[in-house]
Image 1 (cartoon, rainbow, N blue to C red):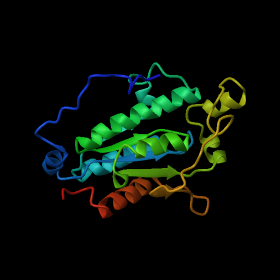
Image 2 (tube, one colour):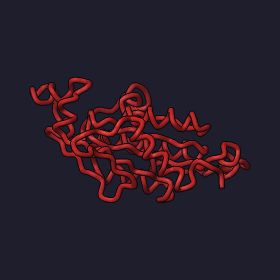
Image 3 (spheres, rainbow, N blue to C red):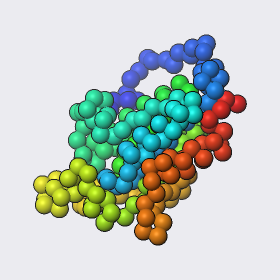
Image 4 (cartoon, rainbow, N blue to C red):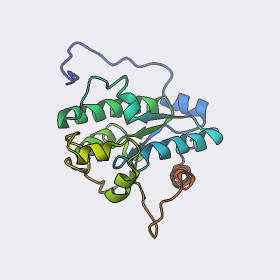
Length: 208
């Protein structure tokens, strides 16, 4: 686990170029778009579609994908509750840095525990944390099973798999909720468009 908070004799060093300067340079407002949902709900698909749409509009974003981060930053972590919490804590801190740099940081992780997501929200001004809940039914996610993980979990070959034998705690007050309409899932472009509209309406896509 992290030893953050145990260090002594350290001091924060301010630099002359601040967040406002970087945002002016980029002509946008730094924020974190945190995409949460079950495995197979479409988080990575939405993250990539959103990043592409923002890029086409001239906005700089960066995707932090949960699986990708476990190849590097979080490769020493497993899937115990303690490791899941540390995984999310690290991503939250990195997301905060990206937002401070003036980027629109798109974090795409199952992040099953409400307290861990709320801890990440608390790192930023509340308006700068945009929680997007991909509220897709377990049956749909399991039918998709793009990585074959649900099948392994049902067979008992994976323990502590979210939605099967480990809980997913849905957001209570997310900024954006995306779900099926009349049994039909929105397309990636439709999902991205909903998030872009929110960001546009809140003024994140232009410097203030």
